[in-house]
Image (cartoon, rainbow, N blue to C red; front, side, top):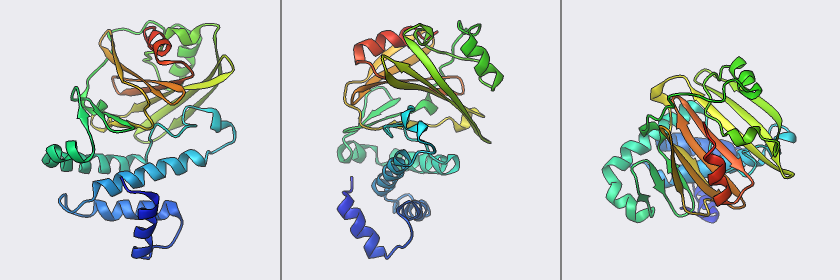
Length: 265
């Protein structure tokens, strides 16, 4: 991965002007226009990482600093750019997988999860997990979410206990993706549940998680594979159900997060 010093030198050599965000997007666009052989995927990933950190450092509101993105560890991109980049890099990696395993220290341990030095990529686009039944649809939380287009929910029942206080629910509707962020408090610490619901199978993406600081534990709950791991002091739980991808960030140690995840139903 490039260092910040190397990147600044690169920008100076190209004599780019404008804000850092504009330059990062410009570099990505230029690389995407190149052939697969000429495309610099390391530079693209560096720019994506920087864009994600910029986004995390510039929240929409002061209150949003407390939601599940406040560590900037779950990468979200403009959909059209994300789809194009993911497709291009996927094609590139197909032809260079043996090289990538050496250069990027990649461990493909089940075909779905790619483990790098300090982050993981989960290829949810390669899974078809979908629950047979949803057991929490009669709860007040599920009813509210259903009124906003989330009518099939695979949630941890533990979130409904008295230990967890849901403080805010925010919705975002788009042409291709509808999302909801459920913010909660647990023992005076903040956590969140993010659900992204995609319009069709073909656009369900892979997702990257930064600053992974533990082993990745896999649980099988019904038809669903659930991934649990640590990101610094927070546990992360993620899984796919149908056209929806769930990401939970919770102030628990890994063993407790696994027990929390076991209540998904």
